[in-house]
Image (cartoon, rainbow, N blue to C red; front, top):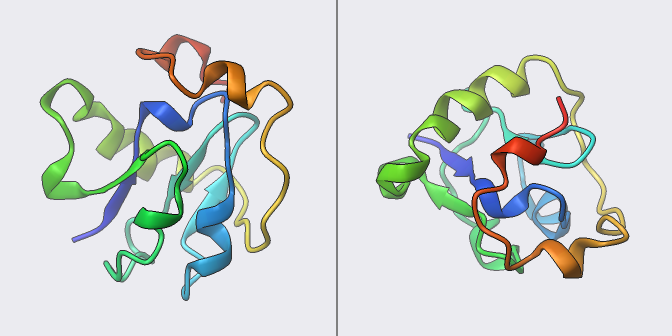
Length: 107
């Protein structure tokens, strides 16, 4: 089982989760983070660190966001590993409560 980064991370990219991941399972894109499913050990330490509640166990992904399971797997094969916390995107506060942000994802 793995954890999945959902829609609410897009255009925010808070990286608090990265600092606590014991296996460096996060990958970084231009405006979104994903979790590499083969590296995630299901420890869940990242979940409470996310200020926008964007990380959930795979079995708890909402029905309207099931596509994020495959999206995390796909993008984690393309994007580099991130192991250190960075500042959130400059306008993250403006985007943190916006829903349905997939169209804003930069690959």
